[in-house]
Length: 297
Ligand code: ATP
Image (tube, rainbow, N blue to C red; front, top):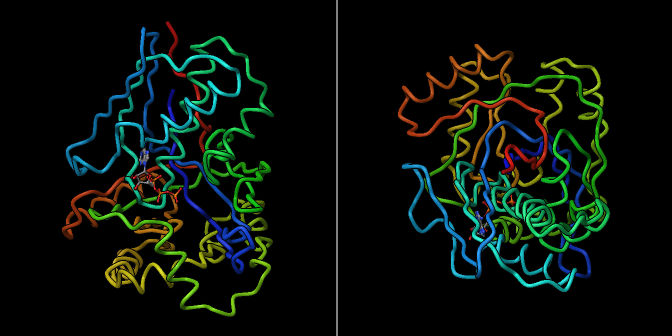
């Protein structure tokens, strides 16, 4: 299974709800930066992870704490079957980077194991299991561009005929999502109950105009992420000075994304930011499909 990263084109955050989650209005976009999840039949359960050179060796938890273990447990319990299989994750999505890499692996594991165990889970049940796994997991199944409400788990596809180009700059140290939300609550104790609606962003997507999209990008968590990591503010300024149409913290950060006008523009901005000393700079287009099967034997 191939599982894409996401960025939030719009992230409106409301005050915390009674269950502790914040209500969100978000527009997700799946972008062409992928983890690969492989599942094989085996007499017991095991999980392996391989990481690119630039990722920290202990970035991804193993031994029961991985979201893939939890996905397998949920699916097995839902059908009353035993959790068996040999699963491998080849990571490429920055960990704890605000790009939902863990959620992408969780979604891919649900679909891979459903297939491996011959369960034929309905789409409705898969989406419900995904929502139990995490707020971003239903979107990771759906992919494309989609509106997320509730705590982000209620997803509706958005018609998006554009091809948008992004430069993605991960940070070498992750930023835990709960820490960013706690900081947001401290900085904005009077946040409105209802999150900022996504109308402007949806209008920009419908127009297909890259400058309109640049103007409409919105992230309520950006100020909190930058307050925790002032270097992110400097990175966004640097990217915009180097010609990005707009720079933005991705979700809860610390990954920053830069909107470009074309594939060539993205490649040239990526080269400039690499040349300026950022060790990992990636170019990706969106929207792309959600978690999907690429080979089956
Ligand atoms: P989001 O944008 O959904 O808030 P994120 O991109 O900031 O998430 P993830 O990469 O999804 O963060 O990882 C969040 C945490 O989940 C990590 O710190 C890690 O401990 C844990 N985790 C569990 N399983 C995985 C996995 N397969 N890949 C990455 N992280 C995982």
